[in-house]
Length: 178
Image (cartoon, rainbow, N blue to C red):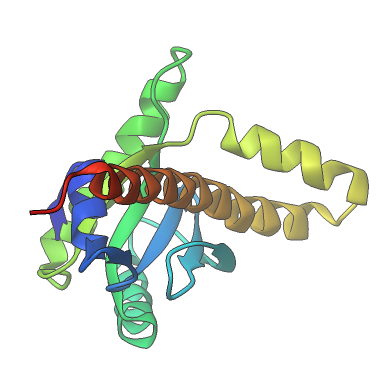
């Protein structure tokens, strides 16, 4: 599993003038749960997938489930939510994310996959404000929040990809032909 900057992941996905050489998995990493979202085959839309229970002792189980998703969806990379510090307490959240990624790397089971971080500040709060009026059972609410936070992270990344792809196409069309 190799860290790449956001632009590098964009370049990996944007081959032959179009997006879609593989799909992405968005992750919202928390202390007890990891929310997952997957992109469609054109990397335009993020959809909620599932929530993994996270314990110190179950990295192998998480790895197995992630490997199955890599195969099933032809994933080429992970977009992992990373809380850029706004407040002091977010440093511990950021450390949790880094520790989780290190655990995945230590398994050695994601060698050909790339990953990048994406700013997830306030994603959970936005999802919470959207779901709160629905008056859902607290445990269901937590799982939905984790899944939809992963959707928010991945969708924001995909929207940025689409914007960059349009910029590339426009700049190519402005170049004189020889």
